[in-house]
Image (cartoon, rainbow, N blue to C red; front, side, top):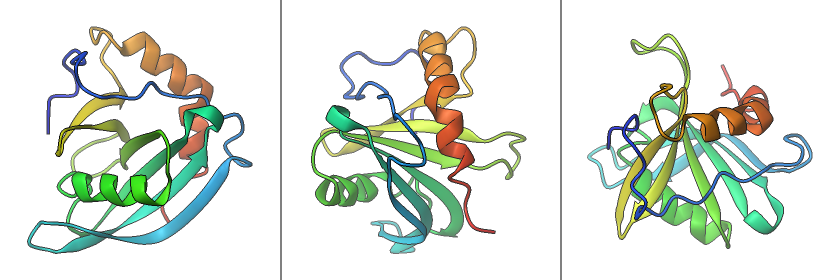
Length: 155
């Protein structure tokens, strides 16, 4: 994974973070035990998938790591392929890691594709020195926290 605290590469294909008018009414998919394929030795994994319709901006998907099977990070390419086939049009894919495994807070990273290779940028939390800090902070305040609040994985 790239260091998501470094400046975003302008050549990387990160779709701008779109508005999601209402996190509850725009939710089009909520699968707490979504199986995904992976080229990793595990062959796949289980994540919590939520997808919202963002109007002309396409879809916003949050894939939450559950620790079951191959990680979402190691399977990002396969996850991207599956979601872009299932939800045509622009897609913003966000990888969510709940607090734990040594981290005392949740993490949210945007996944972009450079050819067939996934790349990441940190959305939340971002360090104040990150050039995207204000953009990501504003998006999280306006939309991101609401999306995460209704998208916690099943216990």
